[in-house]
Image 1 (tube, protein in one colour):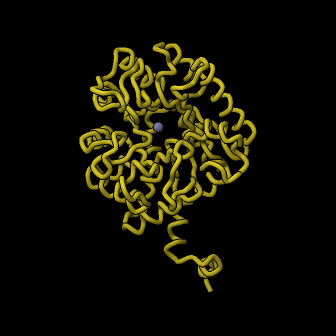
Image 2 (cartoon, rainbow, N blue to C red):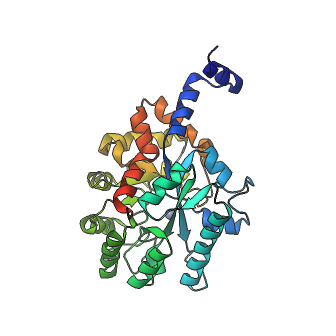
Image 3 (cartoon, rainbow, N blue to C red):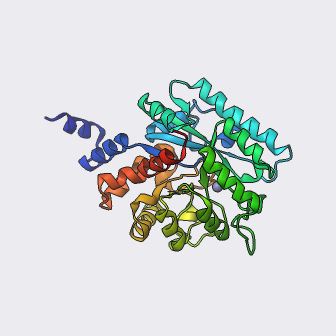
Length: 338
Ligand SMILES: [Zn+2]
C-alpha cells in the first residue's frame, strides 16, 4: 500500500482532497487584508492563543497555510483621541505581537526580508494602514510611518479625506494635490498603493499617476455583485493591464446580494479571469473586519477549501498558485524596497 493511500484512508480524504491540500501547502499564500490588529484589542485576545474568537490568529494562519499576511491599522472615524496617538498604539501592538512570537512570524520591510522570512518558514507580516486620513494632510507623516515599517496604504476609507474621496461620497472627485503627492512619494519610498474603498475618479487618477502596479486589497467584481465597494469591469481591466492585483474578499455582501457562498465567490474568480486574466487575482479576506462570513470560509484556517474549489473548477496548478499569492508576490517584488 502506498503511503498516500494510508494517509487518505486515515483522514478519510479523497485523492482530490489530498492533491489540493498538497498544492495549497506548496503555494505561497498571501492575504492582502485583515483587521486583526484592532479586532484583537476589542476581543481581548492575542495572536498566539487560538480562542475561537475572531477569524485570525497564528494557529489558524498556519492551518490555513498563509505565508504572507497584511495587517491593517484601521482607525475608526468615531475615534475620539488623536489619530496619530491611536495609530502608534496599534502599530506598537503589531510589533509586540511579533516580538512575542518570533518563531512563527516576522515583520518584513523589503522584498529580501520577505524571502528570508519565507525561507525560515515564518509568516511574513506586512504592516498596512487603511485610510490616508491618518496622514493629516502631511507628507512628513507618510515618511515617518514608512520608517515605522508601514509598507501599504489604502488611500481612503469610505469617506472624504485630504487625499481624495471614498466610495460613500456623493458625486466624488478625483485625487487632491496632496493625494497625488502621496502616491508619488509612496512610489519613491517603496509602498503599495491600495485603491480599495476609493471612489472611481480617484481610482483613475491613481492609475494615471502611479509608476508602480497598484492593488485593490479587498474588493470583488461589481458586475457579479453590484456593491459600491466592488470594482467595475473597466476598472478591473485597467488594473490588470498595469500589472495590478485585486484581493478577493470573503465578506458576504461583496460576494452575492442574496446567496453568498464559496461557489459564488468562485464565480468572481471565473468572471475576472475571463475578463482580465488570472494574473490580477489575489486574496484579501478582510477577516476580523467582517461581522458575517460564508460558512465554507468562516475563518482563515478554512482557506484550503478555496484551493479545492479552484481545482474543482478546472484551474491549472499554475493558475491556482498565482491566485493564492503568486500575483501579489509579483507586485510586492516590484514595489517593495529590494
Ligand atoms: Zn476595508
